[in-house]
Length: 221
Image (cartoon, rainbow, N blue to C red; front, side, top):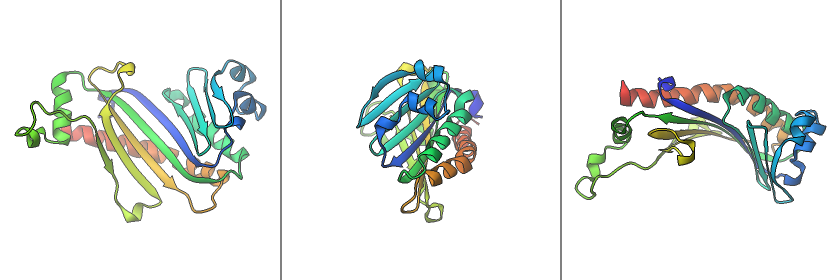
């Protein structure tokens, strides 16, 4: 079902902990044989300083690191696994870095083709007739669902649905972000975060697609 509508698929890994942003530099990645020297030299560096590091490798990977947050993100599906390997290898090298949580984000920008389907999607998720007596022509802007399941801990699941960003130029676009947030035990480090990422990356991807397909099937089947 999802393939009927999918325009852009984005994957992101977010690590929460204590970081030294100035370490995260393309030349450092090259020195550890994580990327090619040429790729490091051609990287687009926005800023690298004590409080923030942000750069892009080629046209496939965005990296942003602050004192308490590290994110790897790509919108190019052929690079999903290389990005996972890179992020995992970084934290194997930085094995003693304190990490308290890992987020595996699977994001889908979908085109609903026409305004009727666009309206139908929002109206199915949140019936707009509930607002007809108070508002003129109500529309759904965004909605967020969280999984409230004590047995699911330390995994927290959050699903956010909103219009696609205008810059992406997705016709009648909706954005569905499935965030899998793993809370690590106290005193966890980069080594444990790397293992968690390797063990859960594919499960999260498959499960996220099932969630999105299930939503679409309820609206359009």
